[in-house]
Amino acid sequence: MYPVLLKAPLKDYIWGGTRLKTEYGFETDLKKVSEAWVLSCHKDGECVIENGELSGRTLSEALKIWGDSALGERAAEFPYFPLLIKLIDANDRLSLQVHPDDEYAMRVEGEFGKTEMWYVVDCEPGAQLIYGLNKKTDRAEFERRIRDNTIEEICNFVPVKKGDVFFIPAGTLHAIGKGILIAEVQQNSNTTYRVSDYGRLGADGKPRALHIEKALDVTKTEPPTMPYGAVGSVQKCGSSEVRLLAECRLFTAEALKLDGEFTVEHDGFVSAVVLSGEAKARWSGGEADLKKGSSLFIPAGIKTVFSGAGELLLSRV
Image 1 (cartoon, rainbow, N blue to C red):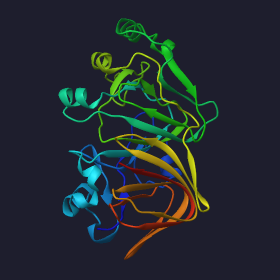
Image 2: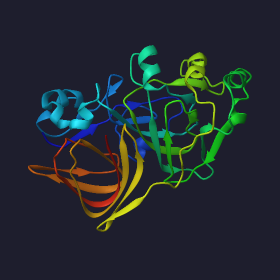
Image 3: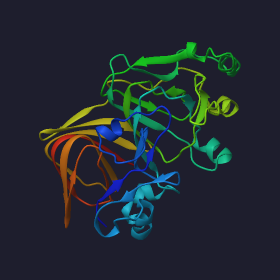
Image 4: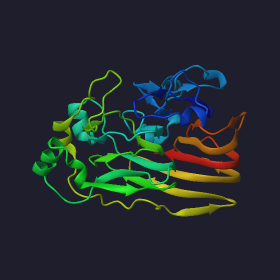
């Protein structure tokens, strides 16, 4: 086993921009890149290994070869690879949407639900997003407002700034706003229920599908209770700093401000995604140069030393 550099599958949804191409170096013929799935074993887009003896294989194939020891005991308890991590460039606002919890998603969709975390990597002045509702309501009012297009009147609009954090449990109504670049750590699921798409037309010239009945089943019709924004404790590690972004039974996410050297060694796998700057990763028998947008999957128990200057997103279960 060894740490593997991952090539991300790319998505070109209608609301995407070009920053992931021009600033993060993702090579593609797509005119726009809405999302880069920088850690993915999902059937809708799998990461491919770019270094070492498994170059050209998917991460899923590598994990089958390596076995549960690459995941670590906690991650191996999941019946599926537990995480999906994305970089998201919202050149326009995303649809108003909600994700189901595990019970509903397994029963209705045949895959697990989606709890997720947003880390605002960058944003335009005045950017905002929707995070839950601004008041407690009931299913009847929620449905009425969806159908008469007044749903935004009860949405919790939040101005955002670089570095803000939003933890989004399954069932929370949400929408990323225009001009926001986000790193998203989530359960390995691609089930999304659109509540509203603002009358927008898809690439085929037709309105994109809504999923109102399912959204009514799963949405929590009350304001969010989790703290958000400039949250998360910061720990000094030599000249570097580690900020805790999210910690739950599904995943832990941290932002590492790398300045010099920082060692990663965990009893479970670790995902390291470079959000800014440059770094070198070294381990017994190998090394890799990392740049903005690079994604490194570190199997469980492998000591990896990062050196350089920049910001990295570190995620694990």
